[in-house]
Image (cartoon, rainbow, N blue to C red):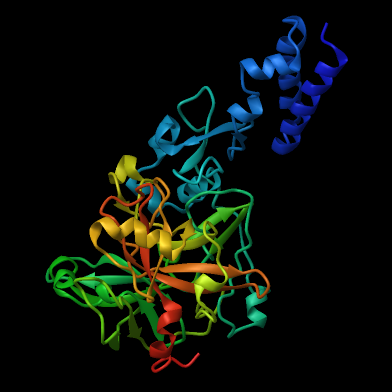
Length: 424
């Protein structure tokens, strides 16, 4: 028999795991498995933990919609069941995309993790039921605050993942380009900063490389989430939630910074003037311009947020490696102080200016091609508002290289120039 101390240790571990998972049947199973090494084998709790990791550290269980048994949180590329359902047609299916969103889980920040069935290579029912009631957004808190910048109706959930929520970051803009006899292509992002202006990178709207690769900027798309559906919808908690129709706004005027240097990417910032947008809503709103320099309130390593439709490994099985994402993504990146970033790029003889800042440098985490022009954001906890700190500008060719951060245009540095055109 095990000592009372050893049994108490096992019970504490089992109960902690059971409460975290909220799975009562699993408690008994784990309790029995815990008593074997602690009691019958005659080993103490300390000896058992030294020989093998506790199950709650080795395996992160998670719920799978439409299944009674929990799954295991693991990298999406190592889940055969996920590979089967992650095809190009999935992006056009509300039921399938909603299911994929539900099985995202908190495995690691470095790679996408999904809840994978244990002991099976297939999900039982890999879709969410669409025949449900529609979410009523009339009572949204944003309806009572129609003009304030940086607000969003999305409330953080415990579930992690790289796919953004349908109402998350409502200021995100997708830039669509047109070449002769070819369909529209997405290549950059931007941020709505007023009812008539979008902020982006200069290299997204001017330069020889832009004309040769992407063509001419045709539209600024707002209220976008999933490029394959319109309107966009997701199903969650037995409620179908749909956004408003996408807005394709032709650029009325493109204003690049007068000192933009395409060779060095310095002063990589531009404004796109569009027709006045409709009234703000849960799916359309401007982000706030910064009120202070990021260096004055962010400490090294503190996380900032990025979003966009850039290259991702999330859909690599069917769309290929580093394919542009059809769905809005999100990511958190650590801020890197200027001195350290300057030293990092010294071997390339590249010197940062006051108009640039750095973030990233973690393995497999970075903004990638297609994210150019998208915002680097920080959330002000006291105000409850999002502010734009940077604009995706420069990155290494293979994004997500450990030790090499991305370089962003420092928006605060350009406020005087922005305010010549934008009244906010």
